[in-house]
Length: 91
Image 1: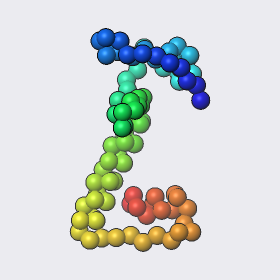
Image 2: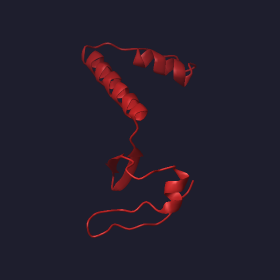
Image 3: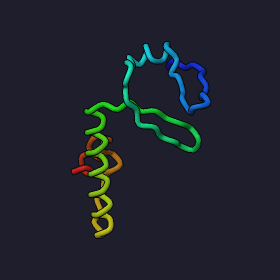
Image 4: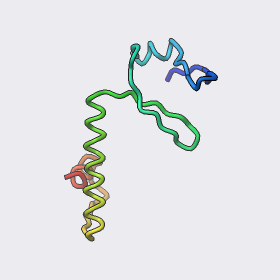
């Protein structure tokens, strides 16, 4: 994992150091989603593929919440793999 130190400008801008940009293959105009997680600022690169996955996950979570509200449950076996559990929960 690569790391570097940078600082916040008076205008609220942060420069991603060149070694980090190179390591992550970031180009000018790359778009990010910015998260504040307990005071830790996280950047996640936005790509069409990642955005589509995030939207599908959000829809699955919404459907699951609706089913929970209706009292539906799904039981899993602790011996099941993560993929098997995900498949049960996301379908």
